[in-house]
Length: 318
Image 1 (cartoon, rainbow, N blue to C red):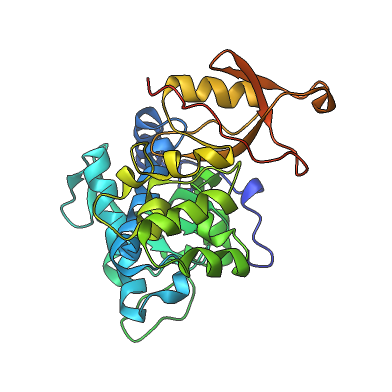
Image 2: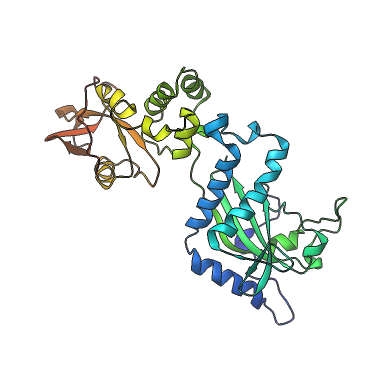
């Protein structure tokens, strides 16, 4: 974050002659009514990044693995996918028409780095920032008044927001959570061990062994499996669930029964498209008051390092 930029104390609208900006507030009200918690916004940004990475076909999962031209394309993907998600009409001069106002969508991987072309001066901007490394995103509105733009510009006449302009952003969502890219959180040793496996199935097995108790998204599974039928590689009947069963590993999905088990064991609850693996052991006296769940009439708890591996019952798939 830039020095001197304090979004927490930013004014809620750009001051005009009447002390407010009704057009900006009308756009803000509509977006917040459509997506009060920002879940649709966050999912759209996550999807845009994942489409650009195309991990299933390229094996890429880090920003520095993209070509320069690909990085420049992310803003276009975010703009297009937000319009699809919310059904924004085309603007007459800018990208969208929202609540009767033209709105230009600007994306930057650097907070405050949005480039404003001359034709957008005086228009409303929907400014979006996201970082896969930080698992965070922000979105806000600001009117691109000349007094809020930097004095300089590039060869195309594009200018950035000045310090006062950045302070004038009306934040809709600030530092909101972005679904985590687990492959960015694993150690280099774990990543090397996963991708050293010769087949997609064995890579997934290794991933579920090494990334226990952490949500693993569908996109991560696709990147590691590198196959069209990647979700089949998790299931029983030859997938990781059955291949790791003898080692005490269960892989919980978004089934309600699986979420109930995760809750009983104190594990993260798998959200849509997520999986959580964990090694279990039959509950014994040395486990004390550790939480447990019943499987096939027996009590199982999260295994301690000293617990031997033992085959775990098949999970219900309802």
